[in-house]
Each structure stands twice: as C-alpha cells, then as structure tokens.
Length: 315
Length: 297
Image (cartoon, rainbow over all chains, first blue to last red; front, side, top):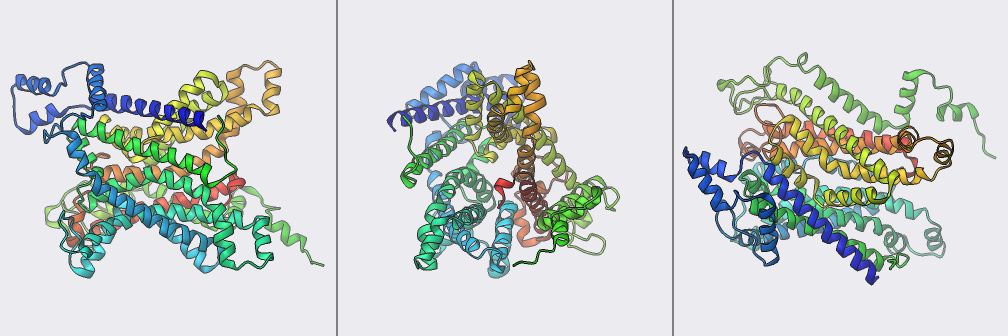
C-alpha cells in the first residue's frame, strides 16, 4: 500500500506538471495579449506605450523564464497579480472559491440524493411504467445543455413569481440564501443525477441477478433489505467511480450555470479571465481545477480499497 | 411441455431477412428507441443538407422593423433582436452543429486511434509517454480544456472543431489501447507474426479492423457530447463567431434578458440542441447493444 501511494502520488505530480506546461504554452499562443486589449480599449496609438505595458507585465521575457517565474512564485504561495484588477491573483480567486464550493457541494448532494434512489427504483421495477418514465427523465437530463435548463428555470420563475432569483452577497433571509444557491445547484445537479441514475440502474440490474440475492430472498429477507442491504452495497462501487469523475463533470456545468444565474464564483471568473487574457488568473485557476479533479480521482481510488475488501493495492 | 412455434421464433431472430431495407426494418423492430434516435439523426442531417430548400428567409439578413417579433404566420418561430428569422437560423444552425459534431469526432478519433494503437501495440517507452499524455489531457474537464483551446486558437468554425477534438483524443486512445493490448495476444496476430508480416502491417491490417466496433460505439456517444460542448462554447462567446447561426450562440448570455421579453428566443434553439443530443444518445445506446453485447443495459 505504501509503495502504491508513493507511485500514485508521483504520477499525480507529473500530471499536474504536464498540465501547467500545456496551459502556460497554450495561453501564450493566443493571438493578442492583454497589452493588445488594453491598447485597443484605451484607444492608445503609440507603440512605445504597448511595449511599456508588456514590459511592466513581464510579457517581454522569454516563455521559459515566464514559466519559471510562475512556478517559483507558486511554490512560495505567490500567484502573481491579475492584469485586469491589479490585485493579487490568490486574493481574487480565494474570495470566489467559497461561492462555487457551496454550489458544487449542493449540486453533488442533489445528484446523489436523486440519482441513487431513483436508479435503484428503476432497476427494481424494471420495464414498468415508472422505469420508463425515470429513464426518459434521465435521458432528457443528459441531453439538455445545462445553460438551457438554467434559462428554462429562470423562465419558470418569471412566469410564477414575476421575478428571478438574483445573487446577492447579503441575502435578506435564510430562505433567500437557500434559493440563491439551491436553484442553480439543482440545475447543475440534475444533469449529474441523470448520469448517476443510469449507472446505478445498470449496476443494480447486474447485481440483482446474482445468486446471493436469490439466497437472501430465499431465506426470507424483506424486499427492502434485499435491495438496499444486499444489492445496493455491491452495486454502488461503479457508481462511486462516476461520482469521482463527476467532479470534472460538475465544473463544466458550473461554468455555464454561474454565467446564466450571474453568480460571481470561480467558474464564471475563469470565462471572464479567458476573455481578458488575464494569464495569471487563467493559469492558476486551470491548475486549481486540475488539482481538484486529480485529487478527487485519487480519493476514489483509495475509497475502492476501503469499500471493496477484494481490492488490494499491490506494493 | 412448451409448444414452440419454430417459424415464429425464426422470424423473431431475423431469419429470412433479405436486402438492405429488410435488415433495416428488422433492426428498427428490434431496437425501437435506437430507430427513433436514427430517425432524429436522419432528420437532422437532411435539415442541414437541404437548409436552403426548407427556408424562405436568409438566416443572416437583418430587419430592424422585425426586432424581437413574436412567432407568427410569416415567421413561425419569431425573430431575434436584429430581426433575423429564428426558424431559418435554427435550420441553418443544424449545419454548424453537424459540422462541429462530425468534424471534431472524426478528428479526435483519428488522433486517438493512432495514439492508442501505437501505445498498445508498440508498448515500452511509446506506451509510457502516450499514457502520461492521456493522463494530462484527461485531468481537465472537457469544457475547460475546450475553453482554453478555443481561446488560444481564436473563434472560427475550424478552430472550434479542433478545440473540441483535442479533449476527445484521450478517451479514444484509452479504449483503442486496451483493445489493442487484448488483440495483440490473439492467435491470429501470432500467426501473422509467424509468417513474417511486418509490425506496421499487422497493426493496420489485423489489429485496427478489430477495434472498429468499440470505436464506432465510442464515436456515436461522443457525437452528442461534441454538439453539447460546441453549444456551451458558443453560448459563452468563445465558439462560433457572429453572424453564423450557431444554436449555442443564439442562446448567448443576453438570453437571460430575453427570458422575460422574448421567450421564443430561448425555447426553440434549446429544443433543437436537446433533440439532436437525445437522438445521438438513443442511437448510441442501440449501436452499443448491437456491436458490444457485453455492455448491454
């Protein structure tokens, strides 16, 4: 186990190093940098001023030097300064993380609470009307773009209440706070719950055909005990893998949903930073997302060993 | 004792099915949902191909007097802010979705197949390097990767196709590699080696054709995801540039304002995207059942 952890951890670091290089180089291939944008938007015409801006931002240095500067700073906890707000990138990112973290946590909770039980029901009642209904709903969930679902929800709010839930940092009441976060989280979570439901269903169907499930029924265990105690416990393993992958899936949903609901989280911030060629923000945020995805998958791998005693990590 | 009507059973199993149409009818009866998906996709492709024949208005022509006109007899699905006919834009938008969906899937599959085949068949350091590359590409969510790529390459149809194709490569490479690893141990590969065939020839003539079934399953599944990613990129303003009628672009950020004033601008492009993705998902499930019975749901 110890050797496995060391190997897995070094692979993780290698992957993150690779991502940092790719992102850094990709961003510098972008036609036009922040100096061009500032130059155009400020209506400047003197090329010397553009050179001056580039020098101030360190964009005139060779790319390997710029990269070394970034990684060196990162190791010391210095993420650089946002080109747009000129405030420390760490501060800009850190104040937005809690908003997105709350949304992501709620969305994940929503998707598991909805996906797993409905997946079980769909499998237990295979080929019934309810099963077909649930399958159609999950298919819709997978096929609808998250931003469109968000817009439809906003439309529903307009029709019902004449207004839409607007994000505010100081909600008036607990109900307001709940509405601000839970509506977009449900939109993001609905799509993920569809994926979890489909997987729980197929995994349960496989397990329900096993001999030990028949044995449990034969010895007189109740249907609930058979379904939830015997079958689900073994069917949940592949579902947990997907919940690990969900981390990546959720971020995609959050990017568009934060944009639709105008929520100032990190996901929307990434899109804004990409548009403004705000390199320090984009490269740090993308690396941050990669860390979350890689760590989530690492935790899932470790959970395997805990949940399924048959899995042993070879040293 | 059970009475078995062998004639009925034989017909059910597809005996006596003749010709292309007969086979198609048999498959449609056997996989009704897949047939529905196939029908949606056929409609989608025909709409894209014959867009000029089924529309009256030009999708790019603006008309200030029609700005935000609601659906009517003349403009079935209404008009947008610039007075452009929404129906025409949706019909022509099918071309963009089809081009991006097929283009990026084919491009992603082509590179994925080469990497996967090389990685699985050659092994050694090639495998090591390719696997690390795949790890790196898979550590970022599809949309984030596509966003960075799209921003790096600049907004255009070709660049959007490339931006979506690159994140698809690792998925294809993984599947092809694992299939190649299994195929490499098969007796027919050993036989080909024994008669002195070159490695490249074995990989291309014997291993590659046997990886086609999982590749087709994966490609059908990825088609929907490519179309959704294009819609998301264009929605965020980093995909297909104006004035091209992309479904995602039609729902761009200003759509949140139209939720109150012009809901038809929000509803119809979304239906188009969802319908096509439902089609690819249904077709994908049926193709998987047909070509990869072990994964049957």
